[in-house]
Image (cartoon, rainbow, N blue to C red):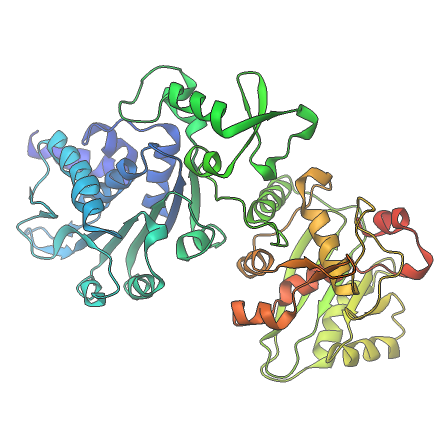
Length: 503
């Protein structure tokens, strides 16, 4: 390739990294992999959970080479003025030396004309500040990250769920300037930095599902080395069981295959669907339920949805030393937003009351205020202003005559009832079509709250103090959402009337 043509091509490739992958690296990427490359081109953080043999390491290698060769800049004299450093890391040396580096080396050699040379763990160039390197991510070598300060910096972490919080803390300190963080992993665990990335709005999120792989869809080998139809068919047979169409529940990972409907076990969820395993039975709200509600919210927003139902407002008031008060506005199946207001270490009753008034000026709206603690002052102020559509809600109250949506379960206190009503609302199989705005804090709270049966058979939610120990903060967002399910005048209502009222 002559110099002028090379320059023209570089300009084209800088605009379209997928074109670079195809034309320069001769990489065969499917549509989902191309979407990941595009994300790395334009987004600072990208996370990818993947089924087995779905090409996650291959696409990671393509992304690294694209960043390495398309981001540096030189002046007219050939001096490197915007340097680029790329680090690939994994929990073990074997994963770097036997998996990642061979993918990189093969792609580098496919291109034939890329500057630099390869070693067992590096791609080096004539410039000391322009390179790619691979190394094990261990807690014992945090200094390994200290040299990664550049105009353009990228970190690609494979088997990201196996990396410790200590390493991620060190890595985060280097995400400056034009930086990229790419996580790729099999979703074996629901905890840790990689799992949390899927509930964070800082990351662009992708799932490589083996059911969608080209080899599987076309029932022949289109992309050598990727998962094939026969392997998936065998796993459907051995790791799933058929269900009726009427029992289909997206939240369970149910899927359609060759004219039938199937429910996967955890092995299939992780190895084929690229989903997290089901959380323990005592977790209040599984991750997938919140994720489905998030997707529905985004869809409704894109459609410029206008709710027809009147607002039910949950108000959790910050006390002394707490970070913020939270207002949650729910309109039937649709939660518009969570409003958080900093308390600055003191309870500002007047400010919170003023925020509530913005909603309850509509006389058909209802506000439910936690009046155990600081919320009592807010409620009193609203009473003084004669806002009679505001209600005192106490999680410690009894729940005489109240049940879940099936009519089977009773509850030890009002907190348990409201939290379980929130769970029933979010459960996809109940058909309420819940829509929630993405909220990292809410996701963390929902999936770290547990329930249990009391000795009398009534449901209880674990004490708030236990949740605080895990979160290192109060579950204010979940409390605010749960308050929207407080049953107004519940002493005089039956289950069906309550359901119509709050759903």
